[in-house]
Length: 179
Image (tube, rainbow, N blue to C red; front, side, top):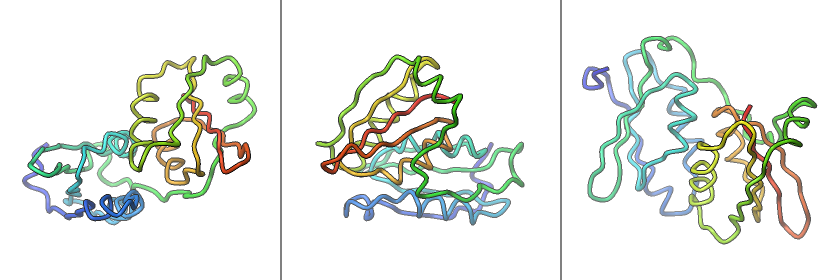
């Protein structure tokens, strides 16, 4: 699709990233407000690979251009999904599973990932780097020093199941596996 024909709605999130803020909610609000014939142009200091999966599951394609100082990513609806809303997010749901999902998790090979020493947005990037190549019989066990509430809607939108457990001393264990 030629994105040149679309009206671009620009959103520069580099300042949010520089301040340590997660711009995901701001991006999703912009995505949800797009009208037919519009595309979202996100200016970011890094290429947001996890966002690609989330928006692909909502019917969006993207183009990305690197420039000195960051990336310009244009998200647009494909013809097959033009009239579908992007949907609202449940920002605080820390669990996404049922009894059958737990039975499946019990048989998954687990990979461990400790993200306590990583600065945002590195934990999110590292998590998605691993889970996007996981097989259906694998799970990722994450140790985090805070409850990653911005991770949950991304995992759900990308089609993953997850379970969060508060293990004490400001530590959380998050299990992630394929649906």
